[in-house]
Image (cartoon, rainbow, N blue to C red; front, top):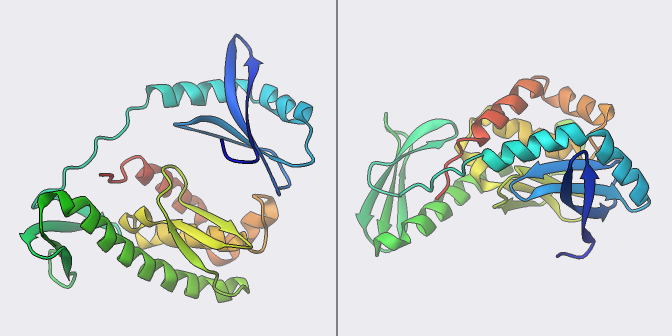
Length: 239
């Protein structure tokens, strides 16, 4: 287990719930539930009693979310084949397969945009496709960061691409902004929301009312975009 994390458990009603407690430089206690289970982020100064009091207060919600995840089916992995349709910036992109030296040919100006994967062997398809989409993602995200950073009064931060399974973005004053490359599948409005959200953390490292006011100042329709992100996340292509 990574440094700063501790495995613990707590009795919530009639069930014993295991969780991972992670202490970090933050102001509030936060709860996250995903395929890994319950994870708790807490300020270094917070006592275990404070952490567990919060868990008890949210016991019903925690139980419901854990049950939801336990019954959720993992999406089937895509088979990369000739003619596969993938979303790129929210619009259909046709994948074509051809023989070649593991390179890509983009044709985004056509009425039906295509990406041709020229492959030495079919087994190379997943790697070549991901590399091509990552390149598109880096270009798109860098442009949007450059667009929103001046509006927030912050310098464009260092950009890194992530492959996180459940997190679309993160921000650190030290290492910059990390954005999930799979966001490239989603419409520009959703990407802009995630970019604005993470840049706003350079002003407010929390999710307080002041933080959301910063987001709203540059992206007023953030609530609708946040709901759209949640909807699209459930069907995000994976291979």
